[in-house]
Amino acid sequence: MIIVYFSQSGTTAQAANELHKLTQAAIYRLEPVKAYPSDFSTLADRAKSEVEQDIHPQLQDQKLDLSGETKIMLGFPTWWHQAPMIIASFFDNYDLKDKEILPFTTSGQSSIKESLPSVKKWAIATGAHVGAALTANATAAITKFVNENDL
Image (cartoon, rainbow, N blue to C red):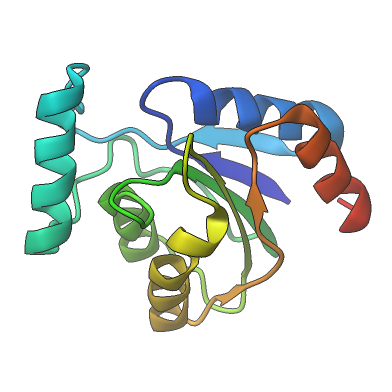
């Protein structure tokens, strides 16, 4: 198993690091070639534009080897009621056929249920399947998820 995540503000990174601590799985951070802005207004405009125009931002360092992995914990913040388009880029750039994707999200207001449709759509297109999913806003929820799913 490997933990792959995108984090803009650091919140999803905290959740990914907690998952890493509990599972000892390898961890990898997705980064766009063109960094997202730190200003919320500008970030929101770019994120909305990417969704509306179906823009899949280019990823930095696409050398991640997933050939030996069967489970991928995939983390992201929820933006515009779905996973950020950089997650679509992940699905575009890696061979995920027959891999199990365990998505986790962080959000102040949204649960994983909001972003699951986009993740499922991208996963199905690559031959991957989506397994258990998590809203990873609290250490207790992360710990419970790891224990309940024998990770």
